[in-house]
Length: 155
Length: 69
Image (tube, rainbow over all chains, first blue to last red; front, side):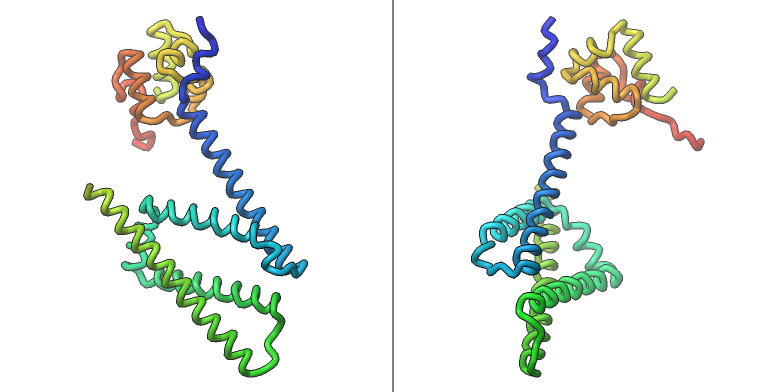
């Protein structure tokens, strides 16, 4: 009897446990990178050009995960919920505002607080543009994901 | 009987050990042990493989009556 035959099999439990461990490791790595970026850029005040490799890695990995979710149709139900309910529309606006506030705080910590009225207006305009683009991209991703999910059903 | 006991009973009826059943459905013994202990929910594919090996239907081993009824 070959007691080691099972090494050649793909036991679904082991495969799924492996996937889970890898996925958790990836999330840890991604958050680690984010913390590293925050420490280097905000706390230590390193210039962007000295941390571009870490930032690129973080953005690349985040983009990959987001695109895979969109192409898998995983945001489809979220899109339907936003279309159907006011509460979900409101929560999308709130998440946009929250991201905008983080973006502005990040800018203020890096570039210092505004001294003139012109600088205040510039920061407010950039906040509004960020929130609109953030919500717009989010909505577009959900719509694309929804379309992709229905394409798969129709096919 | 819950599915854990049903599976164990069906396996014993066929005079198979956990390792023998595991070898036939191409999983590790630990996986069969965990299913019998109720700590792992197998996929439909594995459920079918187990049922075919034990000459049972899905209902025989994996169907559970609602406990509230």
